[in-house]
Amino acid sequence: MDDTGPLTLRPLTARSIVLSTLLGHHPPRLPARTLVRVGALFGTAEGTVRVALTRMVAAGDLEQRDGDYSLTDRLLARQARQDDSRAPRVRRWDGGWEIAVVTSDRRAAAERAALRQTMATLRLAELREGTWLRPANLVRPRPAVAAGQCSWFTGAPQDDPAALAARLWDLDGWARQARLLGEALDRAEGPAQRFTVAAAALRHLLADPVLPARLLPEDWPGTGLRRRYDAFEREFRTLLSQHTGG
Image (cartoon, rainbow, N blue to C red):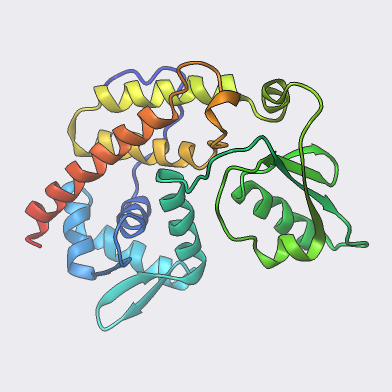
């Protein structure tokens, strides 16, 4: 795969190898020797992997105990989001929308930033400053930061809901990137290239609004990209088992 077109792929580093491996492992805890062997699979030297592990512990990304490395709580939350992006929990949509309106006064900048991040995680879009909404077709808990700063309602738009969805999310842009990633994953050769493209595909799935089918453009590529990523995951697990002996 010499040409990735307009895709921007993050370079493969020792940190990204360790982090992606642990994020994809359940439970996310592996011995140092296994992570070193994973690095070797991608041509990364043992010393480079061990330096990355030390730095990740110092940065609070990993915990080290008895020679094993595991994700910290912050990254466990990221793993949960990634798992959900691969298999979103949905329910039958009756046409209703969930609406959140900020009612908390004099919020600190950190509180505003935390709410914005939480709303993105909940896959809500901002209609205007302080007003967030989406179709009520997802099943997920509502974090305290969202419940504490907002009042929540249910309702339905008077205008065409598909047109509203197209205003709230760049559906064409997301679909275009998803198709490029799917094609790149199909073309990728070798573990390193496939790993790099698959990581980008997983990040892109985090931004999928997971809308009801009747609000989406035709030939929506979300399901197809998930299937491609799942195929890569099975392939990588087999390769990892063969390479690490476990």
